[in-house]
Amino acid sequence: MEDPQQKIKDIQQNMKPEDKALAKETMQEKDPKEREKLYNKYVAKVTPKRSMFGNICKAYLIGGLICVLGQGLNNMYQSFGIEKEVAASYTTLSLIFLSVLTTGLNWYQKLACFAGAGTVVPITGFANSVAAPAIEFKQEGWVFGVGCKIFTIAGPVILYGIISSWVFGFVYWIGKCFGAW
Figure 1 (cartoon, one colour):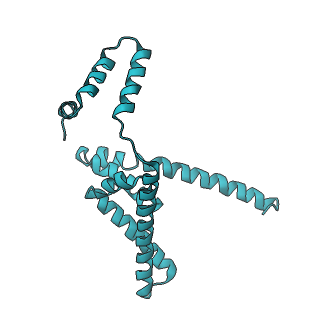
Figure 2: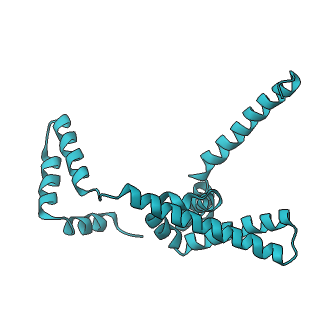
Figure 3: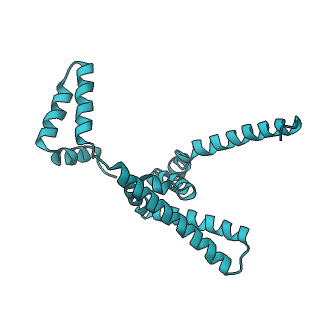
């Protein structure tokens, strides 16, 4: 495990002199409002600038490639004589497996840093959000590490997905009872 103090020292060593001066000035400021202004100025200065158009293009390209991979897997399974619905299930399982595998190899995070929202294609992004915390907290043990942290990100998605399906199902049922649908 990486030492947090060492990480801070590494970051400080790589800072530009003018950024160090601004950071020092920010830390020494006594007035909270002025310190917040200085901090926001510092963050704006050191935050990398990214091109919105470039980000959209990369997200579209990588998201599209993930979808093409899924379609290719689906076509391959169907070419083996597997029924369409079963091939779709195999495709889903294959994409989940590949997402978890690349997460474990630390490739998915690098891809996500490059492509941004393009990697949030529902099934692969969800699989990554379940696998990443489990891998990160594995060292804390199976119960308190993997077991507790595996649904840190995905848990709310599952919870609100189930709740919304109940609500929409109930509304649909009421609509059916009164002839609305």
